[in-house]
Length: 302
Image (cartoon, one colour):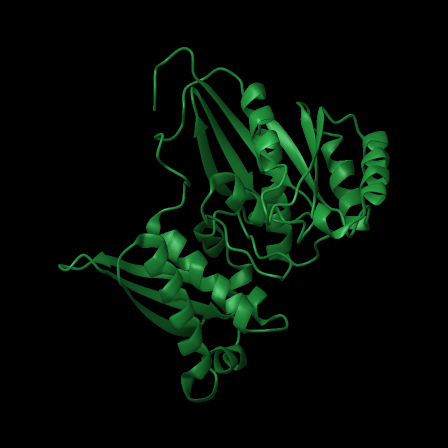
């Protein structure tokens, strides 16, 4: 986006176990909601990029799916997406939940990082939930496991410690042209942003394993004559029984999801949004390559 030889641009992959706080951290880094956040693990399915431009330096932070031992095909595709982002990044930041510490998922993430070249940064997140002596002990243990270029203690929710992390990443960014305009905050299109917003509300409203077997697609995104947006979306489910649950009694559940998503999208886009949701059964969609492409994922061979 610029031919200025003095510019710098760096890709920073945020990796870690599910629910480490990567999506919350990305939103705090960017200063806007670009990645959906729920209390459930594995909410992020593909790589979400947030852009931070300061002075002559541009950083592209990549929120990645959580790294864990995956068995289902969709889960394996998500974990592979995380490692793909890490392998292609200039800097890899390992985000650790201070409360959970060195659990098996974090051990798997550290082991995977050993195969990657380039600088690695350690981020201890949720420091507001642990005592200082516990944080120091965890930091020491992790730095014995891997040679991290820098370590930061942050609270992604409040923003504590985040500014120092951004400054260090700017200092480490290699020379190169910017990839995005200065005022752009994410690589998501408006249609994808809308789909993610609805999926977030679906995760919050529907429980158990059902949200993990659903996907949301924006079929129509139209600017009306009055400047408002009309958005038509389909929630695809794997089974007819799931459709009944998402619809709810007399359609109350899908209505609530739509109202909550519509409110968020109107605030996000700054215009009135008319959102229309439909629920359809797409049997065994997690075993079909074309649907992975729609989510920005590679289809695992097995």
